[in-house]
Image (cartoon, rainbow, N blue to C red):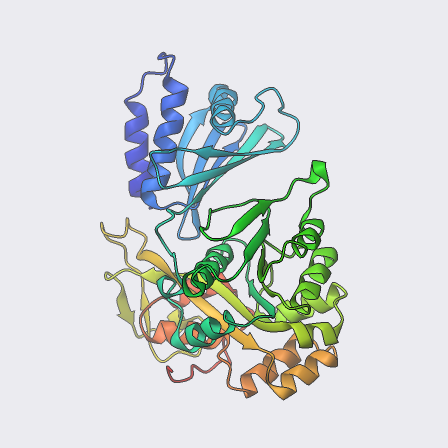
Length: 411
């Protein structure tokens, strides 16, 4: 994306006549179309003292692509509200809606929020329904793909997909659901409670929360357990009530899938313990944790570097740096790939550590001793293999680790 997308969009916007009654509608259409073509995950319409900034997030990186005069900010926001079925006269409260275009294979969620200079609007674009359908499409390593697929055949227990916002957790969970549907041949009863439903999955009875009617994640999950389900998907575990209901479901003969915000597999366990989930419940009900991040993949224009400082303290043998070309829009990267940790609790020492309420550092150490590849080991391996750069690893994982992590041989 970057500068080429911004230049192209600005050129198209410049061709429009501001005096045209359709100027605002066409401007919004151009921005959203450009975002879809660039593969953006989010479009930000940010009001400032100088105007309305438009930014797109592509491959996890946010960049400014257009700037509209401040006098048009209200009209542009109103247009987005009309498209998503929101109330244009409510400007002092958050709203959320959806844009559904039958001719496109992309659905957009629109969220508005009042700020100092007006309403800020963020449009989340969900990828086409034909992409990342099954587990094989996600690019999971073989030492994760095989065990995860086997766990999806279990009749009880919880599989959690954790990571920060925007790391593809929901995409992975949906792929798991399709995997179960595909292998079950309709013989298993699958239900979900989500906030919101992001993608329709054939073969799954999907429900969306509705707080005004008293239907939240925890309450909806308890009712779903009376619907004779075998597999339950909870969109996200956000609080203790939902966590308790989810773990209880996994202990009573249901396979439960859900997402959770946490920085690592070990941190996922620590956060659940901090929420008040009893250690014995986690030990008995939690089958596995898939913790994931998305790293940008180097473009073919990248060049190897012998500068040790370019490794940024990572335990790697070699590294490449992005250069930028016409193929990657000058960014040096094209697309992203999954970086995953896969933690199961079948190992004795790990199980005992959970029962003892051990902290994140202890759980990570025991996982490493058990031979489980950490996110840092996989990241260093990806740098050695030329898939990504040390700068990208540090951008996504930060600077708090990695120096002591030695990349293990590829499985």
